Length: 177
Image (cartoon, rainbow, N blue to C red; front, side):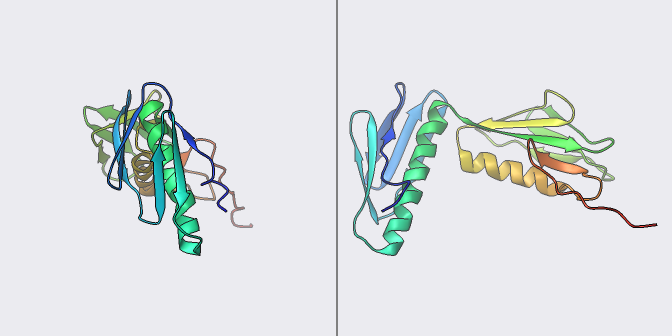
């Protein structure tokens, strides 16, 4: 029995969910998203709920039951409310700015890092040392945040780099004299 998969997904007002074969589509105020459900689970779309049920009792099926339910929940949440990830730049001279559809990041390299902002994603820099990424697709938002963080990961000695807001960096002691 999946702890996650057994709960039904409630569909908020303003969100339309439809199913065409194995493809589940959701349309809401933040946009339209779709997800292809695996063949090991059955999907029932009722008036305001989506119920995910396994087809058999095999281990692989039970694992995919919770995964599919979570992906569908993220689909519904993304088109209704959206998702947001915040990054923080720590270091002298580290700053970011948005110019059109490009994110310009200065991270102490000999050149500025130019990151193209994809369609359906909104990037804001309220302060020069903070980046806010928001959109409907949780996977895409997380991937963009991870790619930006990978340019300069936070290092443990001085704590410099790009980190998630609220992330704790385990600090190490420097050399002994």
